[in-house]
Image (cartoon, rainbow, N blue to C red; front, side, top):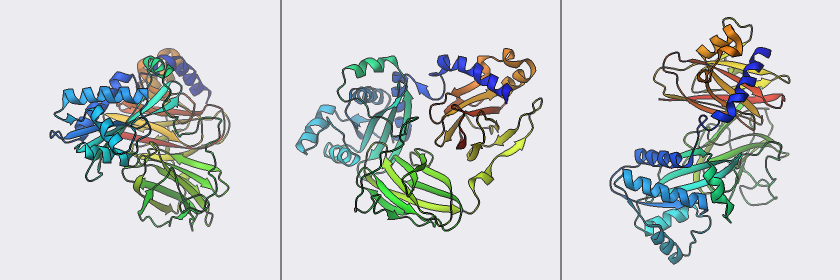
Length: 430
C-alpha cells in the first residue's frame, strides 16, 4: 500500500488550506443564511407566528437567534415573536430563558405567546475550533417535528465572542480521542437506569418510550448470533451507545437513523446481554420509539465486492450509495481503497465512518487516480481531491457530485496505525 500512503502525504499538505472549504465546515454568517433557507423550505410560508429560542442562552446561540430572526423576517412572511416578549412570558410562567430551556418549556412559552411553531437553536463545542449549530422546528399544537438540521462552523469571530462568555457552549457528547468514552452512571433502582434497564425485545417491533431524564437504559439479549440493529424514531435528536454488561463501550451513533435519530449495527454473540444508553444531544426530554432487530448473517458478510483497478495491483472494494460496510484494519499501517459510482441524479454525496477508530479519509476523482497511476503525485492537482478528513475520531466528508465522470475513489486509513473494526457509510442527496 505504499503508493497510496504517498497520496495521503500529498493530501496532508492540502488539508489545512482546504479544511474549511470541504466536509461541510463553513463560516458563521453563511451558516445562518443556510439555516434560514432550510427553515423556509421546511415550514409552510402561511404567515404564522414563530417563537425562536436558544437552548442554553449563551453568546453564540443568542447571536445565531438574532441573525436567524433577521434572516427569516427578510425572506418569509412569518410573524416572529419579539424576544423581550418571550422573556416576559417565561418569567410570568416561572421559567428562565437565561438557562437551559427544554422542548416542553419552549412549547409552553411559545403557545402562551400565540406562536404556531417554535424554532430551537443550540450550539455544541466540537473541539479543534469547530462548533456545531443545530436548528429544530416544532409545531406548538401537535409537537410535529417539521425539520432539524445541523451546521459545522469554524470562524475566528467565534473566539472573540467566547472570551467574555461565562456560559460557553457545551462539549459534544461524542467522546474525544484518548479519553474515557463515558462516565459510568451511578447505580439506581429507577426503571430505565443501568441497574434496572428496560428490556428491549429483539423482534423488529417499535416500542414507545419517554426520555424523562438525561438518559434511558435498555437491555437486549439476542437469541441468535449475527448483526444486531437498534434504531430510534421520533422528534428527539437521539444519541445512542452500546455497552456490554461490564460497561465497556462497544459502539455509538448520533445521526445514522432517519432525520436526527440514531442507529447502531453491531455483530453480537447469541445469548449474551448488551446494554443501550439513549440520550438527547440537546438534553431535551420527550417521547420516542425504539426497536431492535436481529440479522442472522454478520455485518462482515455485507462487505463490498472486490474489483480491479487498471494499472494497480491494489485491492479495490466497490461500494454503493445508501449502504454501510463493516471492514477491519487487520494490521498496522493498512489502507483501504474503495470505488464509488455515483448514480445520475445525485447532486451531493456524504461519506463518513462510525466506530471507535481515528480515521483519515480522502476522496479522489477518477481522473485524479488515473493521473496518479500515470505520473505519480506530480500529475495530481487540487481539483483531483473532492474532500478529505484528518484522523481525530471518525471521518466525515461531504462533496458535490462530479458533473462528468461520476466515479470516485475513497482512501481510508487508521491515523494511529491501530487495528480494529469500523463502518463506512455512503449517502447521496438528489
